[in-house]
Image (cartoon, rainbow, N blue to C red; front, side):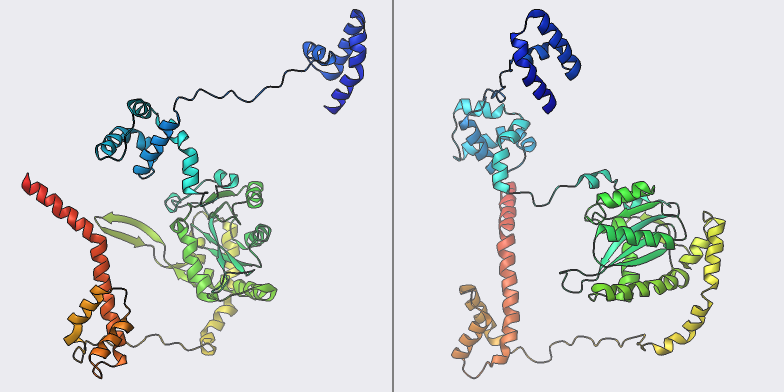
Length: 466
């Protein structure tokens, strides 16, 4: 466009001063060079400019300030409901407010207010709602998240090998501040085969690198990748990686952990059980986690039986579940008819290389910590064995509390000690606290549910009168 503007500035003066034939020749050359329409080119060379367009013409206001003010009052009285709910309520609400003296509008204002459509009500109240409710509490969904389909726990229905659920387990300890290690957990839906990999930091490129390494360990190709709505999964890098490798990317519903029940169970049964809840950070800790997971994957997948749900049906309020016979993840994958023959041979060869591992298990327990397999039954809670020390003054203490409910238990006990010196020692403070706790609960219950009881009694009296 800069070249065209320079061309217009260079020949516009000659075009204005030239004759008819010269103008036609110059116009032909200009149109051929720029591609402009001939009429548009003539206007440009003559120096004509279209008048600048103003802003959109404001529409005619149908509802004045009096109608808008009345709408705000009615909206506040209706507990700030939306326009679609407020519109059918307007006739009843306006009539009730005027009958009880809470508003007095003229007939024209009432007529215009009743003719408002639900969309107009929302449009008029838009600025009022923004100032009343404040900014949005949560950020809007990203374009990547909206493009990824949602898959719930009931949508699996015996998928093919290679559809996995993924999740991150944080090793932050009690204080999730700063940089700490994470564990990426992949769980196959069909067989339960689980792989874990540590991450130095929670970052998308580190996640993709760990995922690529885990794909080399999986005995089947990765076909589906189901995650939660964490930003470390819902980003362009992971989305493009899955598109490039033809991996189906899905996500669960926000705040619905049961949509990822398979991997959530492995998070607790494997990672938390073995690693625990302590804080791990830095290269050294991450490297040790990698060594641990390299041995743990063999033990979990080859030597830890698990049960798998076969069917579930509901009989009234009772849910009946039936499970397959317990089997290791290796056995379940080996017996699956969908497992290719070369994968079965590879699994068999891997299993045979673990004979040394199996032989070491027979004596490994001797070097470990001996833990009790059973605990003694806790003693039953004893009932009161001594008489109530406050039995004689309980009614008086309750009267003091009802008269001055803001008093603390220490103040009531001191008042009792002044009245009866030497009878009630300081050791009774816990007994007084327990009594006041019961009285406060009773008083709070009466304050909260008292109006409901009064309304119920009023309704009963009306029905009896009728």
